[in-house]
Image 1 (cartoon, rainbow, N blue to C red):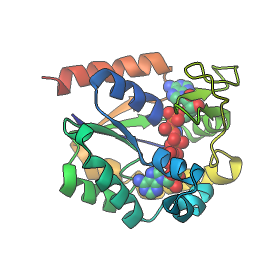
Image 2 (cartoon, helix red, strand yellow):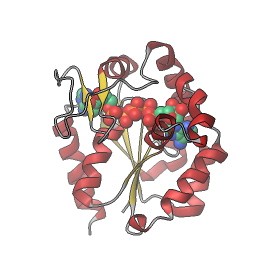
Image 3 (cartoon, protein in one colour):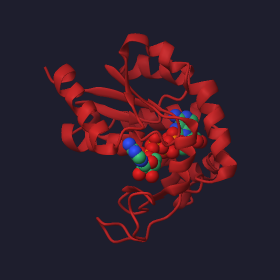
Image 4 (tube, rainbow, N blue to C red):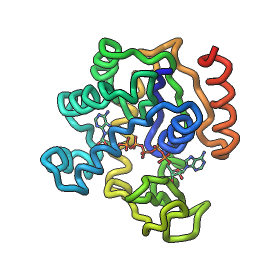
Length: 208
Ligand code: AP5
């Protein structure tokens, strides 16, 4: 099962992708998370991409596509994957089609207002990567591993607008690019009912 999950910043891609990965036993690949991990560890790649992430720009395609290619060649991707945050533009989508085309593209739709609210309330666990929101979760530590939760470096008012503009300009055209592979879901629904709907769809359409 090869799945791409598409949507505006904070539409819930990571939250849904984690559940699909767990239930369908395919790896969740988040390019953004890989970049952030490299920034935290101060690797050469982290230094190269930090400026793009903190300003909300896309990292150049050559860096991003190389990273994805290495990841998709790993053994755990043999039976499929869920890609969260890749592709981000038509050039990356063409690259993916040549390498390993997705069977379905899940599109999560939310308003800009909801996206901003979620970004400002998001907390993530730096250790196990679990995602929380202050609207639902009032503790300061991760319920899974107990680590102190953090705000992401790019979750601030300065970068939100840029990230949304980049989505509209660069990423939204992928809806036309993928055309009949796209299945749209209401990203503003509550997390459990949204996921039930997606899981039912995948069970009916991709597990036959
Ligand atoms: P990336 O990490 O991909 O960020 P993003 O696309 O902006 O998406 P987010 O991670 O912000 O949100 P999400 O949709 O995963 O939502 P989440 O589940 O966390 O990219 C970051 C940066 O990396 C980019 O700006 C770029 O610089 C670079 N980059 C990444 N990929 C790249 C590429 N391919 N090419 C070039 N550059 C690239 O949920 C958000 C919040 O909402 C959470 O708090 C969550 O608890 C809450 N929530 C989730 N679902 C619901 C719900 N249904 N109802 C209410 N709240 C919910």
